Amino acid sequence: MTSAMFHYDDEMADLIFAACRERLSMDPVSLDFGGLVESLHSELAGLMRPEGNDAAAVLKLFIDKLATAVVSCDSPRFLSFIPAAPTKASLLFDMFVSCSSLHGTSWLEAAGVVVAENQALDVLAAQAGLPEGAGGCFVAGGSAGNLSALMVARDTAAHRRHAEAPIRPLVAISEDAHSSVGKALHVLGVGTLTVPTADHRLTGEALRVALRDDPRRDDVIAVVATAGTTNAGIVDDLAGVADVAADHSLWFHIDGAYGGAAALFAPSVQARFTGFERADSFIVDPHKWLFAPFDCAALIYRQPNLAKAVHTQDAHYLEVLHSENPEEWNPSDYAFHLTRRARGLPLWFSMAVNGLDAYRDAVEAGLSMAQRAAERIAASPHVELVRDPGLSIVLFRRPGWRKEDYDVWSARLLHDQVGFVTPTSWEGETVARFAFLHPNTTVEMIDEMLASMA
Ligand SMILES: *Cc1c(COP(=O)(O)O)cnc(C)c1O
Image (tube, rainbow, N blue to C red; front, side, top):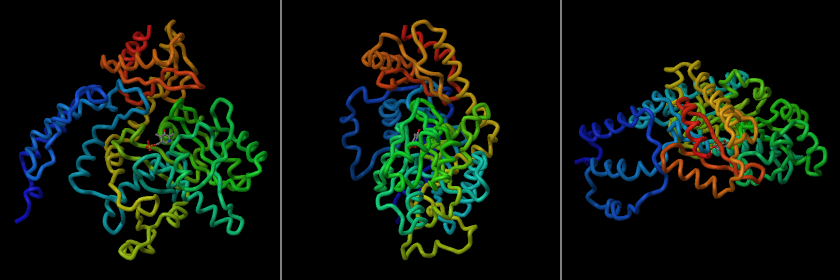
């Protein structure tokens, strides 16, 4: 006799599908709160017991008590950190991926998944201007993508330089590189050469000077440029950095986790990204500004065979996965992972259904929202812009406020369900920050938030 938990239960399916339908049809979703307003210890107590519980009761407990204690990052009023705005098509298909137990580890097991994911990756690589033959895989996030790419950078340099390979290699980064880059280098046992920048933007010139003046210059094997810093949306001088990388035979990695979406899809800011097409590797997070559900980051290499040489996992039980046929692509060969969710499929489905023009328009909407917010700030006497918007991020201040004032204001906005806007720090000063991404954020919402600072 098989356990009931493997039998299809029509009632439970209806229950869950109804909950999904309700959530999907909310327009907009409610912002809700972070943190628990009351202790739930007593309600959760005893839930994990030998005989199980009624599905409807557990679902109700989650929806009534736990889901409300999560700030909805897909609310158009969520303007903190980097928000999310997954398309309806991508959310629905994600559900199908779950129901089908689809995974995308190897060609042998999941060729149908791999060709679809690779079609989506091909679109991203082509939009970025990389040559045909570029490819990679989807990973869980930008952090995993940076780690996997820099591992290839390190090992490729060791291979190419043979006896001259540095004992402790270094990667050149700017102070504004994302924290995940520093963490990745730490994991890899690779040091950093921190390049000073003017106005937080890594330039080719600054990199050239740093390499000239630093006695450790010969140990530098790669450079990481950021295409859209998370805090301020600043795009490094990609073309200049690419030139210096070429002159010094450095691996050129671009962290476009956030801003890569604009590089790939927004004609209005194309000029800022000149040089993107020269990357040896880059990442862009579809779970940020390409409207896919969590968790989904794209990792793309100019020469995927270099990544394959580094990441392929060898084990007796895996030998059957490896073939000589280049068509037979194993996503597991291109990052630090083995078993993997088919996390590129929701993006693939949504791009196929909605078309690429819709992606261009949705990314452009975030950019123009930032411009409009900047205009409202400039027109409001009680607040001022800290700097011009960087991509879809706007930094502004309320003169006279200290950190405590911003914290109180931020908490009140959330309490009143007006918005989720957390302060950041900029050059030592606490300031307010809007990160736009959801195409349904409106100027009225911004006006309401600005008015609350008067
Ligand atoms: C968000 C972000 C990361 C990290 O990506 P995760 O998906 O959160 O792991 C790395 N770099 C930049 C520039 C980012 O904005």
